[in-house]
Amino acid sequence: MPPVEGPTPTGRGVVLSDPAPASAQWIVDYLATPGTSPAACPVPALEDLIVFDSDGRGRSRAAVVWLGEGALACLAVIDRSRGGTGIAATDELGALAAQETPMGIGASTTLTFFTVFPGDAGQVVIRDDDDNVFAALHQRVVDVGGGRRFTFVEYAYRNPVRVVASADPSVSPLSARARVCPASGGTCRPAGFAIP
Image (cartoon, rainbow, N blue to C red; front, side, top):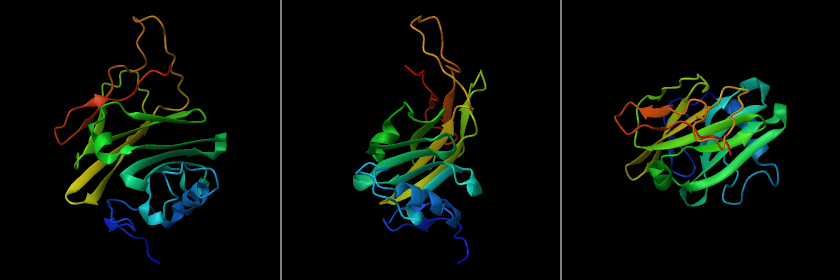
């Protein structure tokens, strides 16, 4: 079967800007392992999966999103090479798009962030990363029907980075000024946060 390119409707009626390629089947298989995913996040079909970042043929590292029950966003960071996986069921898409603070998921020594902008945010960039601690940013647009679109953004701290929280308020976390900014003119958001 030839690869699917461009916007494709999923089994849930959602249209993904970049559907998961057949090579991402290992991620679905991994998520199907009993006890791996939260109950609110049923195992996605390949057509329902948004793959932001993956080591491809290595089949050991990936950052993905899919929609669970009630339009919950299910986030997963898989890092089998280091024995870590983080999976979370978050809020409904509309609530996520209104949330300014990114969601952070840790897997092994990696801390990955996800944020959601309403609509098609255009090209999203990280600004004011003074300490150059953030790795490449990945984004996908999801059309959930009824004229509702969302831009999912995923990025991580460069690996390995240790962020140390301090009780001293004069000590700033790494790249404290860093912001995630949409080209569509929306409001920038904080890119990260200090780990308690």
